[in-house]
Image (cartoon, rainbow, N blue to C red; front, side, top):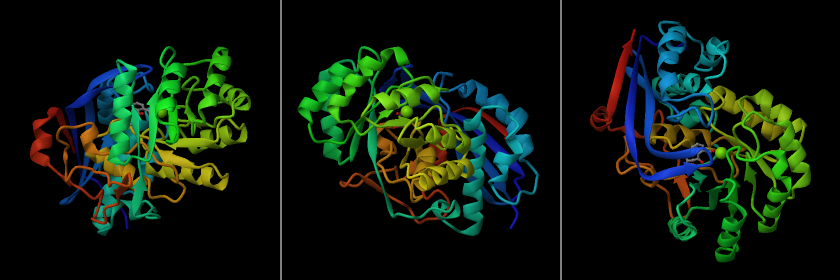
Amino acid sequence: MGIKVEQIVLRHVRMPLVHFFETSFGRTYARDIVLVEVKSGSVSGWGEVTAGENPFYNEEWTGSIWPLLIDYVCPRVLNIELDSPADVNARTAHIRGHNMTRGGVEAAMWDLQARIAGQPLSKAIGGGARQEIPCGVSIGIQNTIEELLENIELELNAGYQRIKLKIKPGWDVDVIRRVRERFPAIKLMADANSAYTLADIDHLKKLDEFYLMMIEQPLAHDDIIDHAVLQRELETPLCLDECIRSAHHAQQAIRLHAGRIINIKLGRVGGFAEAKRVHDVCQANSIPVWCGGMLESGIGRAHNIALSTLPNFVLPGDVSASKRYWKRDVVKPPVDVTSRGTIPVSDAVGFGYDIDLAYLESLVVRKEVLF
Ligand code: OSB
Ligand code: MG
């Protein structure tokens, strides 16, 4: 069964965060998110472009997404009979980089296909290995250690299965020591978002003392080789995020022993088709994976839930409840977690949540309809 899209509606929405989110590359107070609605007849599929407001996590940002979609990605999808949503990746593969922009359209096509087939998105992408997904939280850099400890306590009480702390030079060893003193038995990990270099090896080795589950992307965003050097020196497993943009990268990283765990982000690898290939490469090499997040709205969050039903997503991911980020989400009901720290996978068609379209429209700052 082929799939053909006659109209694409792009919406740039602005959503204030309930609390700022700070990583080693900066603070975010509000999200500027581009949502992609692809239409075939009377059916719509929805996707989210997961890039940030600035080109600091990777090269993409809200301002790059818009012209890329209009001038390059959408024209390669509109009014063309595709065999599968996976064809979006192949038809746009010659566009260098910009995986999140391409992936937002690709994900919308999978949602559309699932809705046309009357299937949940998790099944359409070949997932469905679990009925609920294990959840952790990512806690940003705080103003004080006291606030951080309070925050961790709150998230543990909510049931979350593991705590990830953002670190950077000046907010690392001493902070984690304090956290470990207070919470000696929790599943704990750290994410540096590329804030260190190999010159910091001795400093990073001090983290071994805290038996972290893993340290995520300590070195450069585009590096694999130095991570392999660092991994040889550390007891703590490294987890790769930024530097894995394709299954090919995953293969190379595994071959070099650059890490023992991989974080898969749907946008970073360009959509579900490539995410599944990364997943499969990791599974074949006994590398466990988990689903990363990019402060998504409910739409991107729902896509992450579907992705997390692939069998090798065995570690708690960064997919958490809507209310940690939004006073009100664009989906109904909002994404919520159980007291076991899991999110139940919806068996409704498509991504499994209703869109609160009236509210969503009220957040739109820019809109474009493409034929
Ligand atoms: O590196 O995982 C990351 C947020 C923005 C940019 C990069 C990252 C993150 C997170 C947040 O850690 C995860 C979430 O969406 O909860
Ligand atoms: Mg990360």
